[in-house]
Image (tube, rainbow, N blue to C red):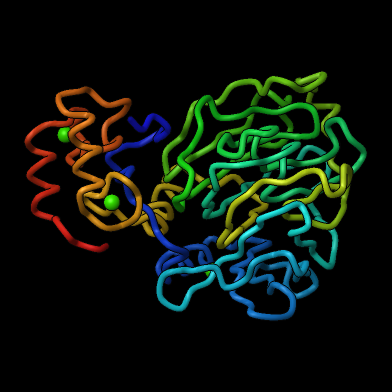
Length: 316
Ligand SMILES: [Ca+2]
Ligand SMILES: [Ca+2]
Ligand SMILES: [Ca+2]
């Protein structure tokens, strides 16, 4: 039984998944005005920054980054299979102190491993309270962390491995480390908890003072070669404002389109999905839309079976 799907709603069918970014999603990112935005479409050379900071914030790929990762249509993503696979912007972040920002990405994580909060995006230096980590938590490759060096929050549950998911961290500046951070998975706010294993684990607002450094992906300002996650990223975007729940839901719906009948996240409807449905038969799901609850009523029953059969052999 699959227990790791969290935070679903009627806005976005939880079973939706996408292999890379859609044009509709990219159009919405552009309209939202990110300062930093990497599409990871380059077969060679640097990653182009499509955000408002411009080419000064293009990023270098190390040779270990896997380019041209399989994606829908002509779109590509990048994979980070080891600590040697990382990227760095050419210029430094303008977001310093205790800033307001939002980080957004399509993320497809492997089952593991990870180490030391390997970041999807990092900037800052100077240790406690002075570095931003939008990352996995510790060695848990499927647990999202949103915070600072030695103080932040993480999701209360893992997200699924092996499928593309839309992940957003909205940070309201000026708060202590345990407040002002909201994490959305596939467009829906997810519960967070104070992240364990960190010392001090909490810092007051006045002690959050992020330094200006280059942006890094799968690498930080310290523990070089030891911090990593394992997975692929697409359309990594950073905004110098708090995204609204409505725009996050709209973008998630474009990034992770519904695929009725698909409970496994591979965007095809077949026996694997039927097996998930049978495992969940007659049960209430964690949240409406979870698993094989295709009609979002919170239960898995004949109505969901009918949807699955109607969509049998369909590829989204
Ligand atoms: Ca892309
Ligand atoms: Ca499926
Ligand atoms: Ca149902």
